[in-house]
Amino acid sequence: MSRNFKLFLGAGVLFYIAGSMNEAAALYVMAGVCLACILGCYVISRLGVAGLNLKVGIRSGTVLAGHDIPLSIRLSNIGLIPRPSVPVSIEVANLTVPVSQSPYLFPLPGLGPGQSMEVEAGIATIVRGEHTIAAPRLIASDPLGMFKRAGLPSEPIFFLCLPRPVHISREDTTNMLTERTKLQMASHRRRRGEFFGIRPHEPGDDLRDVHWKMAAHAGELVVKEYGGGRDFRAALWLDTRAENVIGSGPDSSFECQVVATASLVQALTDTNLEIELFGEGLPTSLRMPDRGRSTYHRYLSALARTKPSGQRAFGTNVGEWAMLVRPGATVFAITSGVEAALVAPLRAVAVRGIGLRVLICGAGNTDADIRRRQVGVLATLRAAGVPTVLAPSLAELPQAFSELAAVRRLHVAEGPSS
Image (cartoon, rainbow, N blue to C red; front, side):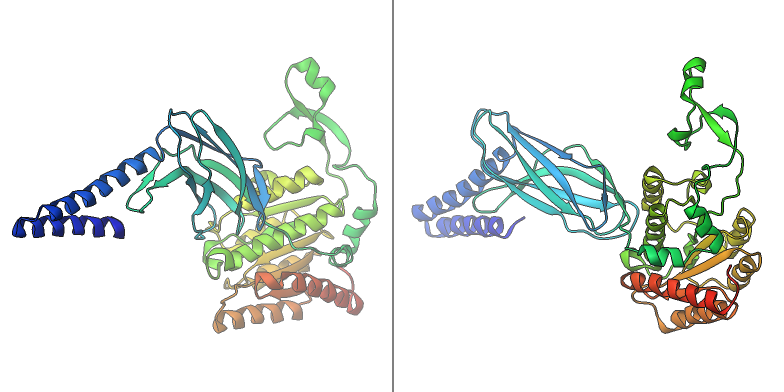
């Protein structure tokens, strides 16, 4: 109950009691006026949403984090009487990253009988993930603010917010690659080696590989298969183990890792390199080497939905993934660096001749003990000749990438290239 409702109800009761005690007709009239105001406000609040049809739509299914989502709000008066101005309440929930957002309240003008109107609005996205606009509805009130009446909810709306990459310069990207990977970047060899046959289309296959003539004869999609060439591609290893996450929400180390991975995907896509993305819980189709803008959007969509749900130790995954990488390729391992016994598997990768680069991500509120552990891993890997940098928070990612490129240049100047 609102404050004004309590005041009018209390005043009505007091006027009635005082009138009965003093046999004063005027006090009965005052009590009746208070009750009439309450009844009138109740009816007005109900009429505020009755006969109104609300439709809320979204103009874009995906957007980068930090950008506004454009909404279309359409309101129609299907009743026979004019309707006062009412606001629409919209609540946004992130289904991937735990983050609190205040509800939005957009005022809408009054409408006459049979009239309709459409307005555009925007809602801000804080962090990547799958979002839902849960049941937008009209919120009507009365002139005295006694009652609030919610209209029937509209259908919920879902949209995907992609992680927003940080910019990595072309020079820094090139400096982080191995010499063999740079040769692939400058070559014009076929994308997957020599053609040797066709097979039925499977989910996740690139439409560029569809054999359209054969598909027309067979009546179903078939794709061209290529043998493994001599390409030295780039791979990204994302640590998704839940126990390795520092902090929670948008400021966690995992969000820093996801943005770092998205940034590397964008930078490597711009070089036209074939890339592979490994991560426990991520679709296995991302491990197939691919390139191009369609691959970029496919990888970012997967990163937008990923959660720190991995159960296996990241070091165990590293050992298995290293068996799938050709010596001379460039691999970026993105982790929080807090897992025990992580250094040995990473050093073993570098010994195999793989160009390993390690990015350790922290959280904005990392405590001193965890930070010392991260710095210890950093020092140990650098001493073993593995280019490694620390990004203490998401805001320091650009500086970390520049530092990783500088560490890589120093490593090349002082010893043989990897």
